[in-house]
Image 1 (cartoon, rainbow, N blue to C red):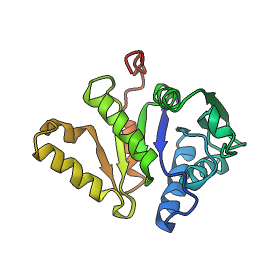
Image 2 (tube, rainbow, N blue to C red):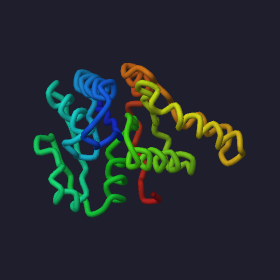
Image 3 (tube, one colour):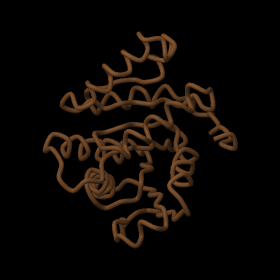
Image 4 (tube, rainbow, N blue to C red):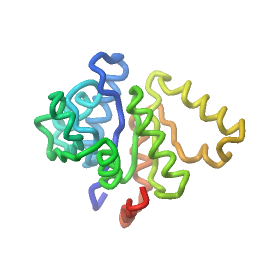
Length: 194
């Protein structure tokens, strides 16, 4: 990879996590660092977010966190990142993370993680970007969501083609093959329409 690629990862910030999910976050962090892929994420130091960021940093990788100002008051920001960008709102956070990233991966998480996935997926459906979106189905966590998406398509509320907007991966290493297919000279699209 000539130019460093950036992967935005959405994942849970809850303190209590499944051991298999923690292991997946650690594996992904190690994989990103060892392959010189920059992590872009929500800037937190708790839950899977903190585990992932620490794994990248411990392996010598680069991490950019994007945190809304109001979350500073909750003292959840990670103090040891390569770069922490403070923004004014949740929407500004998502847009900045989008602008900084070449692709997206989703680990297990809660409402916020799901909302971030759905927004970037909707933007892809609206042809505002064509960046890869991967769902890491650790321990079958996202199977109910996958069934829901299939139900939406079968019910006629989304095109059959929309199933191609997402790539489901069960193994962390599979993320590399998706990232390797991104052309080196790809420009990050203008996000003014978001």
